[in-house]
Image 1 (spheres, rainbow, N blue to C red):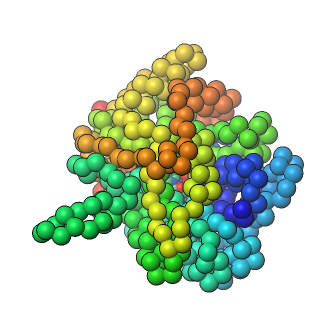
Image 2 (image 1 turned 135 degrees about the vertical axis):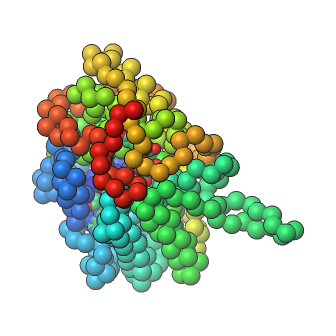
Length: 393
Ligand code: NAD
Ligand code: USQ
């Protein structure tokens, strides 16, 4: 298949370009390097150094024996997006090209507006360009499990049967996001759902849990093929942050009680699931929702896991609760379905401790890079808009 990845220079995008190429697909990518700038703005850098885009493309060609066709530019420009879609004529578009950070969207009005307009505009442009030039292609749009929030009900995959005043219908499950970023994903989902109805597009909206990990077997040992691994408060996700903290002996920063529950999955599993979604498209006109995660975990389970794996590797580390900078439920029911990807053939990783051990071992040589930016490990972006560093509890 011909597959266009929007956001191909990012954490998941650079990994996915390689995972799909190994499957024999013809892959192209587009990105404008925003992620690199955002992490710099947060005063940080990737724990594992990231090659520049030219070097990345050169290494890609050497390793896989084919070119990754690549456009550098902004998805907020419609003529630019239209030109790519018209020229490449993809069978599938994987849309990862959004700002993925809840804390970044909580900084101030400028950041909240940026995250929502960036994310909605890029999605609109891809939808319109697909409708104009490749109306039979499949859009795989990255949503997030966080769109559902933490309702006091089990969570189905997108839709549920409702009975109200004697009548029944199959309706979208209510979305109750917990940040301006997560709401941008809800608004994007609604627009994709409507485009499928309006123009008979086929789309898969992936409600993905939190991804962790830094390596795919396919990447081998060529550092230019490595994906990024961030640890700052806005672009480092919890497990990736915990592993970086463990490597330098910084206390693991559990926000609040640590009883919050989320769906999680290793990077390899995310690649496996996205590949399955791309290779098994829905029918024309269908808007399909897949919940994508390996398992549900409580956050303190991760702190304990990381601490004990690190200890075995000779890196003793403390777990410390800090004031929760976010407004989120800390004690709640959480039971989301995730049957559809299993039905498509997803084989979840069985041993997440092994994944953690691999990640910590890969990070160890970069301890000095993490230590150099240690100040970014304690958050100061708060959901109420105040900016002050949280205290240990
Ligand atoms: P990322 O920031 O590394 O990737 C997004 C890429 O898109 C970046 O390289 C960025 O430069 C690019 N981009 C953003 N806006 C752009 C624009 N206007 N023009 C051109 N390029 C632009 O983030 P990621 O972690 O790889 O996430 C990718 C997607 O997956 C996001 O939509 C995110 O919401 C979703 N997601 C991520 C996770 C996770 O744990 N990483 C979990 C669930 C969902
Ligand atoms: N948390 C800690 N300590 C930390 C960092 C985070 O306890 O050092 C807590 C947060 O309070 C939250 C949970 O860990 O309860 C997850 O936070 P996160 O920063 O790892 O992830 P989140 O903000 O939810 O966002 C990430 C990705 C986003 C994706 C989302 C999937 O950045 O792109 O959409 O995971 S989900 O969480 O399922 O919505």
